[in-house]
Amino acid sequence: MDIVAEFGLRPIVNAVGTATRVGGQRMHPEVIAAMADAAGRHFAIDELQEIAGREIAAATGAEAGYVTSGASAGLMLGAAACIAGADPDRIDRLPDTIGMPNEIIVQRGHRNAYDHALRTAGARIVEVGYQGHPGAGRTHAWQIEAAIGPATVAIAHPVQHAPGTVPLPEVAELAHRHGIAVIVDAAAGLPPKANLRRFIAEGADLVAYSGGKAIGGPQASGFLAGRADLIRSAALQHLDMDVDVRTWRYGSLVRDGSLRGVPHHGIGRAAKVGKEGIVGLLAALRRYVARDEEAEIARQVAILEHIAAGIDRAGLPAGASLTLRRPPIDGRVMYPVLHLDLGGSAATERAAALSLALQQGDPPVYTGEGWLDIGVVSFGASTLHEDEADVVVSAVRAALTGARDVAIG
Image 1 (cartoon, one colour):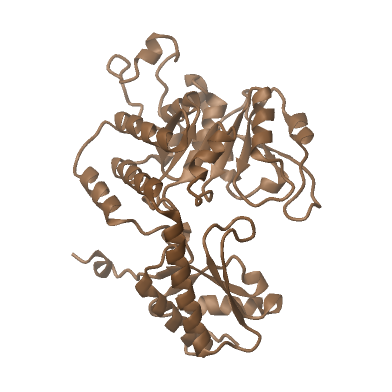
Image 2: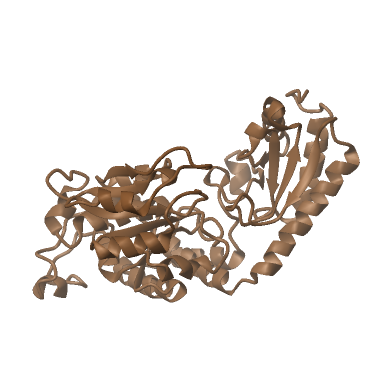
């Protein structure tokens, strides 16, 4: 059965990249085959997670690892682990954190919408730092230290371009001096591949990665890497805990006093991951670790050069220009990106109209919109096949010449 035709689905050409809104990364046939194999079998999920944890630990240099349903779910579980630890009563109460330490410090330059993941676990965000530094804000280490108190459980440290923020190694040293954890959001931290090990090496206690972006696993997958005690707490709040302590695989934790009792289903049950997702993530992670990163960047550059040449031959509107930018871009983007500048900040509406026109085409072509406010439509190739380059060129040519329903100007 052609499931795409059966449901009337409209495939798109993804020149955005690995964003969730366009389906993340395309999975390799080996990953799909691994997921299909897992789908036809049964496994004890706690045992499967234990095996996955060892693979993740080996890839990251962490003490332990755990597969999640995405990086955001990893952040929620990480926050829950820092708040509840191994206390089954606290695990049972989350996200109600009244009367228990629940504060997570975030530098002002690191604030973003994914704070929701931390707050979902019951955390209260404590913001530190100043406004006014070029970029996102300015923070001094003493401001972080001054915010640490009896209710503090962690410092959150997302991987993002934020000039003026205190770097991770200094944050980790300060946090550990006060006995609190550091949670790193590395959803967009890959590539480079070296970042799989970098954040643990720099002192992070927990790192949340996306599995469906650069790694190329299932879109609704990710993983946590970090301290074994925190990973255990995350697992206890995520696994199906409809168990009898006498037969539970980890019943020895109760018998030896590590746990006061078996926790009930935790806050992470809302973000469970199935056997297919765990096996798919592992297959993709192995491929990613073995990948030739330079060859992949060269492949993407070649596709974008082909697109640029094709658009340029058609003739650009007055005041427009094409620029192929190589990583790192703005200190953050680690893939090559092609910028079609329609005339700077004065052309923001023009750029938005072009992006919309491409989405309304046949086939729909989705492009990057991170620079629309400066009149730029961007094209990434991390999710493009070579044979899609000419499709992008034809779509842009048609849109620029007014063949689409939305006028570009």
